[in-house]
Image (cartoon, rainbow, N blue to C red; front, side, top):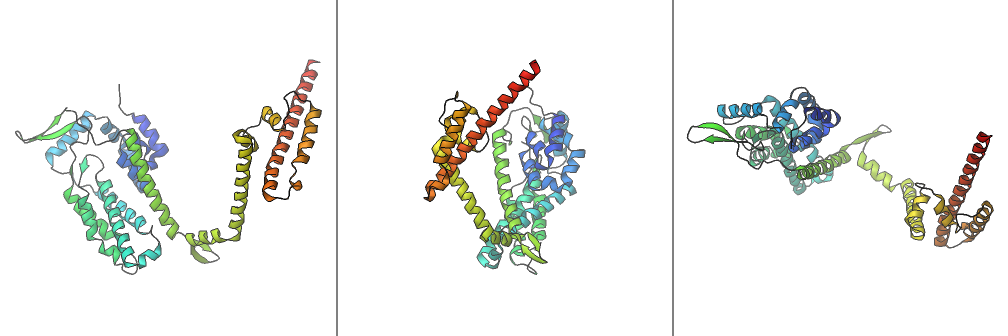
Length: 382
C-alpha cells in the first residue's frame, strides 16, 4: 500500500486551511500545525514563505525521499549541530514574545498587584516564553531539551516580575531563551520513520541504516488529540487575554470589554431576555413531556406531517373537512389559555392550544393544496 503524501493535496490543504496548519496535519507534522494555529500562520509571514519555497521539501520529508535523507546525512557529517538560521531565530523570538505576552495579560489585572499572584503569573509567562522557543526551534530533524530554553527564560524572569514603568519586558526573557537554545541544539537522528542515521565508531562517519525504528510521530488519533488539546489551551489563554484587556470607545471614554459585559449581564434588558428564554425553555420542556419528541419536532417547525396533525386532534386520517373544523373549534375552546387562572395550568394550556392551532392550519393548508392540484389536473385534462 502506497502511503506517500500527495504534493497536490498538500498545496490544496495549504491554500484552504494553511493558517490553521491543515497541510501540516496531513503531512504528520503535528508540532508545526500547532505552531501555525497558535501564531496565525507564523504571523502570516511564515505561511507565505513556506507556500513559496518549502512545501515541496515538507512533502519529500514526509515521504522519506532519498535526496532529502542524503542531504541531511551530509549536513550531519559536516557539523555536529544544525547551522544557525537567522529566519528560524526570528521566528523563535517572535513566538516566544507572543506566547509570553498573551499568557501574562490573560490574568485579571488585580492579580498583578498581589506579590504572590504576580510571581505565579511571571512563572506562567516564563514557561510560555520557553515553550515558544522550543516549539519553533525543534521543527524538523532538530532536538533540544526543554530545560535549556526554560533556563534562558528564567534568566529574564525578573524583568517580568519587577516591571519597569508598569510594563513587563518579554524581550529579554525571549532573547536569553533563544540564545541558550542555539547553544544546545542538536540533530535528531530518529526524525524519519524508517531511517536511522547513526555514527559509526569504527569509521568515524555517519551511515544510513534501513533498520526499522519507532518514529516520534503519532498516529492520526494521537496527533488530533495533541493538536486539539493544544488548540484548546491556546484558545482559552488568548480569549482570556482579549476579555481582560480589549477596550471599546463609548461616548469618548475607553472602557474595557469585561466591564461592558459585566454591566450588560446586570442590566434590566438582559434580565428580561433571560426570563423570556427561561419561560420558552420551560414551555418546550412541558410540551416535550406531554407529546414527546415527535410533537416537539412539529412545534419547532422542523417537520410537519399529516399523521401527527390527526393524532394531536384525536381524529382518524379519513376524517372529513367538516369533522376537522368541528374538532378544531371544540379543542380550541377547551384549551384556550383564558379559561385557566393557575399559572402552571395556563402555560400548559398555551402550549397545547398553540399545537392545536398549528395542526388545524396544517390540515387546512394540506386540503387546500390537494384541492388546487386536483382542480389543475381537471383543467389540464379538459
